[in-house]
Image (tube, rainbow, N blue to C red):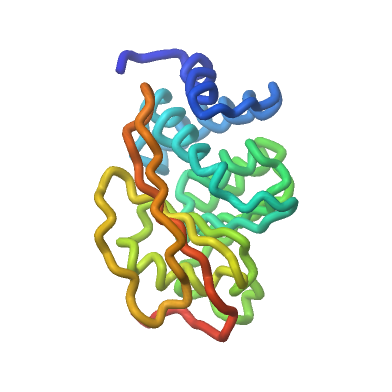
Length: 227
């Protein structure tokens, strides 16, 4: 794809996704993309270094998940291994009513996330610098989220084992699988139930993508698997 102005690419992508964002949210996404590019030159936040890839593969790909989130007001979303903030920050900008927690182990990446939150003037979003395995019951967040997302965190069975304890009863786990065929069985004993595999169709900007959707079936005490 030839280089294009970030704003033009964002307009096309939002149109393909059927998303009508206000001017403020649109500008926030552009500022965010510019800041990701600026920091990535120094900190290596993401493998997306070109502005058009940050827009297409970072922001717009994140927004493809928006229709999969719970619809209720103030739904709680955790984005684990958030990195540069994909998908948590774009989802928050597009849907301000979400209560978002970004979980990131890297000090430098967490510093960027806190900076981006302040720069964009976002409210109802926080960042925890911690490995997800290190979260314990004293953290107060286990079993509290309506939805949990993770991109490239781990193979699906391991991701399910790591992330299920964060979900509230009926909470959903949203795990993009890229173009890879989903062929893993969920390990026995995990307290999440496969709902379906969503096939996101190819468009002029996006290749086809599979997203695994799982629901936590109960709220009995559950801890993170030992390493």
